[in-house]
Image (cartoon, rainbow over the protein chains, first blue to last red):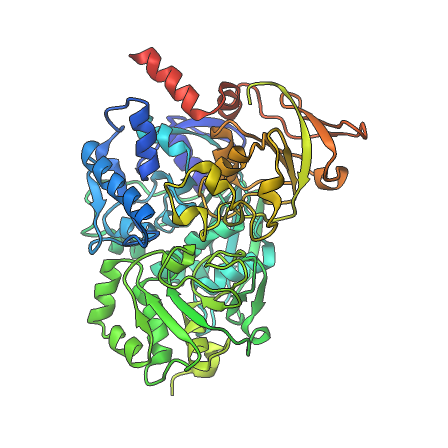
Length: 417
Length: 173
């Protein structure tokens, strides 16, 4: 019987010929990360060495650099543990980024790999044809033993077809899927994204989709590898890898046909990422803060798109726009491309890489009664600050257009003249 | 969760209760070294401000769909610190499910459970068979029991992931 991509990767890493959904397997994990409390736990257990110091990546990103003493203490601890356990990959502030951006840049991921790491958006690496899932407590076991148990998930496929309209981005595709099929569309399942629109999409757009696929509940999100992936990896990794493709007779729990022709830019309204409406229905909603950044939309392409709208325009006087590149590599590329000139001339605040406001930690936390239009991934109640604040999720194009208008706006009204 | 049968008073929650609600960025997350019992006071503050003060050890949560969705933050630690011994849901988010099992706090999925029991009722749950019985009502529902030889069932029986690791590491010494 044929296998899906995730089934093939799990079988390969479990040392089995094949696996079927529902089966429990123990599988070797290729890469992982660790937080200060993971190290605390393994130290308490008396463990002297991690399973493979080269396969562990550490970065402090949620509140980078620390906004208070409590966080500063844990980052200090993390640095000490990185030294104590001889972890090979540590990214100090200034050379850092949000984990799901900086890791691929540093050669963390290759097609066909199995990854498990702390952070719910660890599905991101599926854009590189890896089966990657989020963990937290399991990290203790993984860091010691280099393997974890997995229940082989069923796979659902999203076949994205049609013609993606101008000003629509990867973000609009995944918001549309969340809106149409809900936050449980892929609950405890693997989600495979395929079809001509995915093949034509930029790597950055795919990166966004696999990242935010966490919001439709999935355990893994995965796409096939192609030249766009191989080009990115060139010079970043010299380790061999074996990509996977689904068998023609692979079995899917469900196949969703997503035709994006004539799709409007999409907006997720409070307090649920699946409360999605076309931008026309949100037009005119006033707000206070706009954010372009996060592991979902903090890449060069995202700022390029924002700058196409902001060039020669200004941010509305009643609004502040925060631009937060997701890594120092992105930050430097944006600087060299001249995007910081466009952003700052428009009146935006250009920040350094951090999860920051997305996780309600620092650098743009919302006050009560405030509303934010953001390229981030979650709009749960209280996510970005006060429990009495609101978050609308949209693409960088929609957020940039809204920042100029001072209210939620349709980027199609800002077509370049 | 070493014992097979647990009983407790029910608290009810709706759909899509996120880990942001359980462990808010504005409170518990902003001070990562905060004492667990202090952090637990922030649990559900945005959606149910008085709840954390009212929970008693041994209580059970019955919730709607996708319980524990969102961030991988170890929110189950706070529920456990409040004394919650079991969560029964229409459906559970995967990372929350795994974190809970690893902490030794069981999560059972049982479609229909939300409408079957009222807040304040008591339920008795057999972890091995999945039987969920209303103590006052006598009503019986069947949740999804974990296969007894599956890794998550073994972890639960051991009381969590750390006890399993302690045992294994002692053996190899």
